[in-house]
Length: 289
Image (cartoon, rainbow, N blue to C red; front, side, top):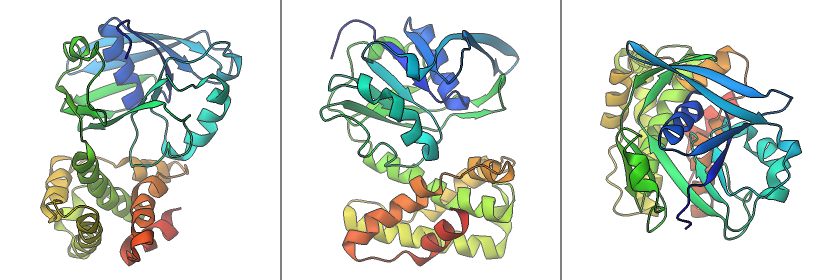
């Protein structure tokens, strides 16, 4: 990978995309937001406890790109990934570095050129709010990985991105977060409740257990080293975020498309070639698609 700092293009200016752009800027990277229209700049307020800072990004319409993209941050909601990448296709190439900052898995499958370098991420940081104000609730651990070695500039980025780690094999961390999202997101969206209700509601707790058992059975087939017993971790996250509204619940409240296909739907796609059925996940996909 190149020693020089890449120029990043960002698709998806929601909470995680904006926070990531902030950390990259702090480390000396340049970031341009790709959005339709003629906006010259994008400004966001990031609130860290009692302190706040203003993020300013230049904005470009993706249809007006005139040169290949060296680095791309994909932080859009998963249902919009294909449409967001469509105008970028002429400018993506085998040396483009792509960092995926999305819920679920598989959203970029078949959408990147052969040889394109993809870095996957897992974050436990929490950000609330809607533009133009983003409240950073918790700066927790974030992992980048999926490649044997990090880029040369990654250690310098770690100095400005709190609790940022590199892990070559992220699969178990991705699966762990996938199961959490596959339980908390759809159940809270379907029943329109805060995350913590899953811990105390007998019926929802039973559904959460069934979803975890199906996911663990599948992931154990794919990897015998998968630890299984995902329910305690799911409930721990639900307790920690008890008063939060899940992203899928928020999408459903706003009448937006949910990310169910990249979360529970991804598990179904993994199960199909193994001849496994995940009836509880399948029902949620049918209901929330």
